[in-house]
Image: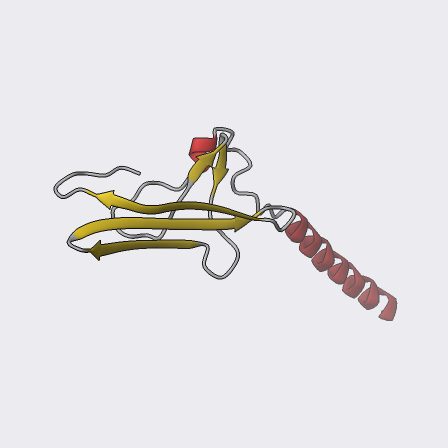
Amino acid sequence: MKAILSFRASRGIFTILLLCLLTLTSCNNDDDAGLTNPIDQLPLATQTGANTFGALLDGEPFLPGGGTNPLDCVYQLINGERYFTLQASKRDENFNLIGLSLQMLRLLKKMRHIL
């Protein structure tokens, strides 16, 4: 009777371990694996201040990330004129810092500016 109980218990433990192993090895964190067009990898344009930014640099998608302040966007009023500044940065696979900066773009009143 003890042999039958231990066989059932070991079979149950084996089944649980097998299910855990299958669950852990079937996860895929690469959400962009199916996207081959670089433009499709950029965030969607918003009008809500969603704090998203993306650009193509040499045809490759650039998405800020890592570091203490990967995206900074400022509107300023200086001497009655409006200015826009944007800075974005990320780290590459070798931990090199890549930065993109648009400094002091003068905004004209009553015009739509597409960046």
